[in-house]
Every structure is written in structure tokens, then in C-alpha cells.
Length: 505
Image (tube, rainbow, N blue to C red):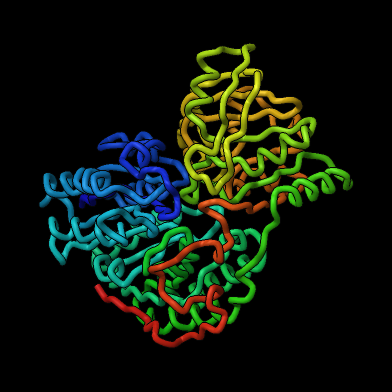
């Protein structure tokens, strides 16, 4: 038995102002053919889980392409090229494989589609027809649509945020596909779209309230013998009709009833799923207070509103400006993405000084540029590293040309590429900086960084200044999302006109 597999995903922010061309999409890597095995085998990724499940089942895999990233809304040209490369392999190898297993994302959109996942599946269906089984693994932050359900034979989401269980989602998607192809399973998929937007900062499943909800869904799935049950938090940083949380259940029977019961349990907890986050000045004060308390270690300040992993450019300056104004000793900022300054530092060399405008060049809402005057170049790097975070351990990453600068007491990591934000200590370490030698470590992220930093940090403080990935939903000029929706519309009720969407394949 042969199965076609691959990965084509994007988390698309319509509020980010830079261009979502293919270069921007693929700056974290574009893999083709046999490269998928060398890059993803034995890694905690969706494809790593798919490969493991296939090898355990004695199934031969036909690789296609792999790309996954976050950023601004994609261009039509970028989507047509990437999807075209995927479907080209599907067409060339048609007749060899019995089924298809794909890692998508769930929150992709482009100039030519509000639903990148359904668009991709439609193009694949044009090649293979309606009867070839297709299973899909998805990100917890997917905005799941009825079209995705109808075009697939099972949607499988990761459950944890940080996403330390991506391999589990890929594994289950592949395992279920193999069982279906061998006649051992007849999965049904049910979707319930909730009129709910979840505060992404509250979404951390390591802590309550989200931990309790995540545990409830897992316990429900086990007690009712479901193949899978996933609570998708949704992706709020895009203005498309499908924005919002949802529940997806895959089961031999009772999928509809299970999805509705889980969705109602979550809806009853909705007041717990909104929060607030301070501005940088208050966050820095809290960090300094945390340093005074008993215990050892550094304090992390995370700037959530300019998180590249949420599609923001990573070029914002609000937190960095506050840090520089205080000139705090033993403080490092890692990182801000600014190709111009990174390349300038490489041209100047270690020990030299550089001057110019840092940051604030892409998304003006994220802060004006900071004027650098004779910033010392402490170290340089080509930006190549391998993740050590439990979430992405063993996977390569490239931040492009990278520099560590010193301005007064503050050190700043400047990168050429934003990649997905700071996941672990690699952006610091590639420039020779050991984070354990600092008191305050600043970064751009939301929750993924916690997989590495939470066990190591003395405290974590979040700040949410203006930015294209702010968790403050009231700051967005939504025009196309479903309304009413909670918490923007506090009087929203459920269920009302959002019918549970079902598909049986």
C-alpha cells in the first residue's frame, strides 16, 4: 500500500501589512520530495508523526512538498505555485497511491481564497476525484469550515498550546487513514462552529482555565471511545467569515452528538476565555518586582502583539523602546527582525559600531523606528540553528544574518528573517549569548516559547502594546467576521443560527 503525503500550511494575518509572497511564506523552509524524510523523520512535527505511523503500518509513502509558516495574507501567485507543486505530484503518481494524508493548518487565506485549506483540498480532489480517502492534520488555531469537513475523511487537530503534540495529530491522521483503507475503520466527522473568539494569551493549555477544558475534551473522547476530539481555539488575527473557535469530532458513531455536547461545555466556560494584558511600562515594573522575590533565574517579558508566529512582522519597537529608556543592566532582547540593520552589522564586523533606524519599518502600529547611534556589534551569526524546544526539537531553523548589538546596558539580537518568533534560546545562543547570564530576557511570542522557557524562567510577564497580533480584539476593524460573536458581542447566545455542520465520508 502506498499513501501520498505532504504539508502545505499557513497562518495568515490580514492585519499584517507586509507582502505574503512565496519568498515570505517559505522563509522557514520549502522541502520537496525525498527531502521530507530527512528533515521530518523522528521530529515532533505533523510529518514526523505521519512517517512514524506509516512505517509502523508497513505503508510506503510518496512525498510531495512541505511548507508551514505564519505571516501576512498570501498572494494569489504564492498559493497557485505551492498548491500547483503539490497537485503536480498527485497527478504524476496517480494510480500508485490509495489515499492521501496532508498536514495543513486551518487558518490560511489569500487574495484568491478565504479558506486556503478548502482551496487546497478542492485542487487535490480535482486530481483524485471524490472517492480517494484524504485525512488531514491541523493546527489548534485553525478556523475550521464545513468545506474542510466535506472535502476530507477526517480532520485531526493538535490539542496543546504550545503545540508539543503536533506529531500526535499527524500520527493519528495517518493511522486512521490506513485503518480506513484496510477496512478497519469507517470514520465520520462532525464540526460545531462556536460564536466565540478565544483570547490567544489565555489559550496556554499548560495552565488553567484552558488546561481544565483541554483535559475535559480528552477525558470525554476516552470515555466515549471517539477516534478523536479537538477543540480548535481559532485564529483571531484575520478578517474572514470563518473566524472563531470550533469543535471537531471523528468517530465511528455519535460524532454529531459528541461535538455538540463538547461545544456546549466550552460555551459555558466562555467568560474564562478572555483576559487583559498590560502595556510595556507596567510589564517592566512587574518584571523588576519579580526579580526582587526569592529564587533564582531570569524573568521573561514577552511582547505578544508583534509575535511573528501569529503573522506579525517581528519588527515592532514598543517593548524595546521601554527597555532602552530604562537602560537596565543584564538585559537582552531577542529578537527584532530588521534585515537592513542585520546586514549593516555584518558589513561593519564584530567590534565596530553601527548607526541607523531599527525596527518600525513594516507595521507602523507596532511602533516607530528607534534611532541607533554607534551601537556596538558584539557578535555575528549566519542564523542557522536546530531547535531544542520540546515543540520543534531537531528541526532546522534559519533566522538569516543575525547580529548581537549593545546599546548602553542593553543587548539586542537583530535578525534578517522573523521565522516564527523566539521558540527557545537558539536566537541568543547563535550569537554567543547565554540567557542564564541575564536577569531580564525579552522576546516576541505568545505561548509557544513557554515549552522551553517556562520550566527555566523565574517568572514570565506578558505585554500587549498596539500591534497587528494584539490580543485586544476591540482594536481590530473587523468587517467580514460572523456576528454576533463573543466577546466582541457580549449578548451572544448559543446555539442560535450556527447549525452544527456534519459530513460523513
